[in-house]
Image (cartoon, rainbow, N blue to C red; front, side):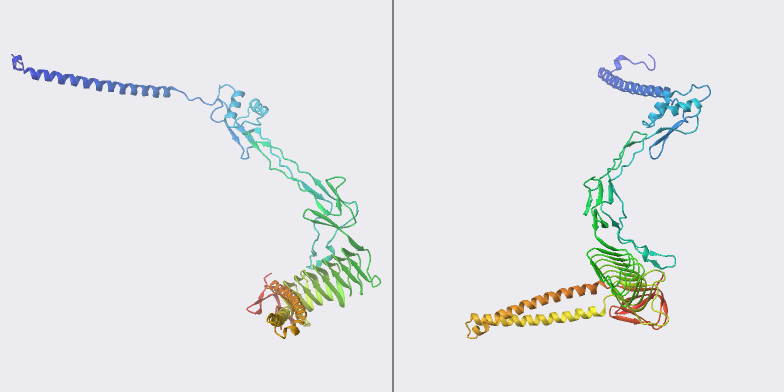
Length: 523
């Protein structure tokens, strides 16, 4: 036997059987691993196959080439096409391909075939051409009224180049005659929708109609859109109302022979008003000339184009404003502002402001009070004429509040005495005191006195509230002089005074710390 030969008798049968079982198990395990390996190899082969296929696929290129493109404007209302130059030997561009290309780039509306054909025929390459247009949206119009008069009821004075103010340029009222057309209504017009080149619809804003006009002495019966005047008078527009107010117009001068004129509406004088005349208007007084020593009373404004020379006898009183080119030697009282180029030796009282308008505005002499303040180009003159300029509440107003407060206290004490006396009588009567019968006859008299005191207290307290309101209204007022302030001027704010003992200029005066203070006015 050879060196490695095995004698069968030397092999243990049990060991031989065990070896066979183990070999079988190992063969089974090897078979399972082989099956798993085969599956894995199949998957790898399949993946490699897919990769190979994808590598073999060719991504289709646009028939228009890589240089062609479509551009849409920012507002979306215009589209541009650029066609790249075809390669040598390539087929011409096809219109269908171009249309597909445009559609793929989002342009679906307003494409103009003629422009595209023109590009192909003319060989327009490598430059943008407009090929699509949107339809613009058109906004509608709200309803509106066309007025055949100026809607402005008042235009202020015109400041001229030299700094003065032209009061003749002012317009306070507009006259209309019966049947005059006042307004025409234009109905709302709806807008139209638009579409951009992407096909998006653009809607206009909604429109609205206005309500019919209201008013006094107007009519739209013949045509609901046309409003006419029913009377001769003054036209005013306030919101959605047109009112025609009656006016009294005088074409020439008014002299002492005319005497007194009273009118519930406006009084217009297209001339001068001489001394001795009284004009009383429920609304406005407009004088297109001068006024002398006349008396003018208006429930609205007073406008005097050429000024007043009053000889210390003219009186102007208005619940509204007073405008005049100049005011000389007159007494003026306004519930609003007083405005003039010059105020000379006059007594002026305004619940609003006093304004000596324009660069040449001046206040010389007299007493000028503006509750809300005073503005002037200059104050006083070289002769040091006494000129008092006052703002805020007047001392007499404060004195009146003190007086009324003391009166209220006195009336309250009287009331307490009357009530105490009445209480004593009532108590005596309840106790059947022998004095009660004699005292009872005094009760009616005491009751009447009590009621009278209550009425007085109501009036006093109402007046106190009124004057306190004035005190409050004038707080924070200022006096501004935009030019020379001459010696002889007294600056007064509320109850505090500042005499000017030497010339100065460009000053603002105000009250602080209980006294009048001043600062340089920066123009």
